[in-house]
Image 1 (spheres, rainbow, N blue to C red):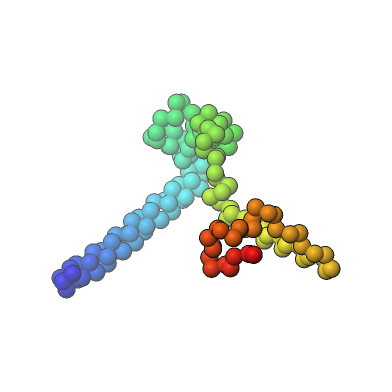
Image 2 (cartoon, rainbow, N blue to C red):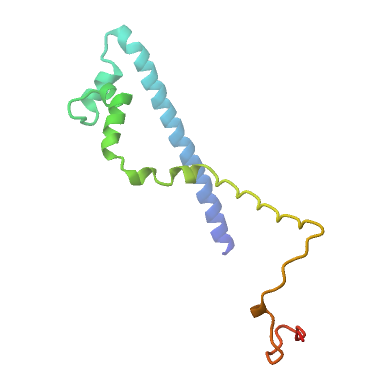
Length: 138
């Protein structure tokens, strides 16, 4: 990458930073206007924000915004859309997997007890080849 590319990258990052700042300032100004209107409209006899949203906003099938965003209505609308596949594995993604319990140690041999002899099939005969450098058993 040449120095021109680096300069263009820095200028682009600076302009993006300034653009995001300007957008956030405009959003905060709009939020302040809506908040002021929310509090002043009832005192001045103007229509409420809900009335304006009902008239000028999107169509919710003749329902007001308060009816649409009521928790009971949201739950009933979501119940028709949620299926079993949505909740499968959600807990596994939220919670970390639990660690495996440490294995139990082997029991210690009882002192004074002789171990069992090896079975006859495990003992190689004299004619069998040696395995892994073992010496043949006479």
